[in-house]
Length: 180
Image (tube, rainbow, N blue to C red; front, side):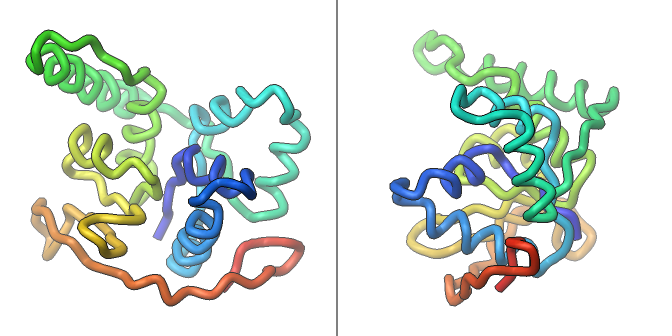
């Protein structure tokens, strides 16, 4: 199984004073146990937005953790991102004429996950569940329980919540990698 990672997970992991720091680490360990971890090119670009972070530090982080960078955004991903963004803009405008607050990058991240991986690991369940209803989303919290929102159940497209309690352990992996 391949899990795509949203930038908010990595940002929380890097900020040791962030209340979600420990949770981000545990979520990554859990996802690592399921298979391969990747980030999309838009996630990489967002992470480069931190003026204190260099490109070489970012590359070193991904190399040391074994998280792969997928630079591919093919036509299908662009189309899916465009459709999801269009739906978002329409929903926002229908809500008392509100202007869109999200940027296209969020939708490129979701579209990449939908096209190039099996699931998306994110703290932003609401956005991705609404924008990409067929995407399997692994998030941290929903109604007081750990949650894996998976729309692909028994070969059909339907919503199902598979709850996961947080009994994960965090231990340093080989060469500083993630393991549990």
